[in-house]
Image (tube, rainbow, N blue to C red; front, top):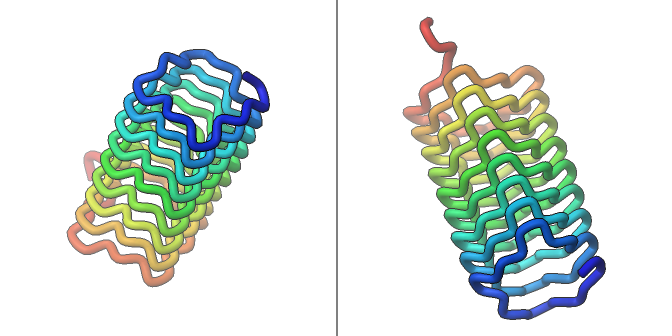
Length: 181
């Protein structure tokens, strides 16, 4: 299904584990509760797609477009999403653990309650994002941009923030520091 045109398709609950959807057009597609484990979505356009409760664990999302997508409670653990755009996406309570999001764009995204534990977020744009109540233990945010972001009640124990831009970032009641210190 490489380069498939599936814009506005209804694929709720579909089994697409391991599918080759590289460069596919999935704009506005409905993939609620779909199984996309290990799917190849390099450069795919999932803008405004509905992926709530979907399982994308281990998927390849390099340079994919997910701007404005609904990804609440979606499993994105172990994904490779370097350079992907999630600008304005809804990622509330999503699982982003053990994933590589290097140079991805999460500007204006809603990540409230998401799990980012042990994730790689080097050079990521989180400007104006809502990261309230995230769990980011041991995550790497080297050179990430958090300008105007909300990290209220966030668990940031043992995170790496070297070179991060924290201008006007809200840290009210956040837990920040090294374990055991």
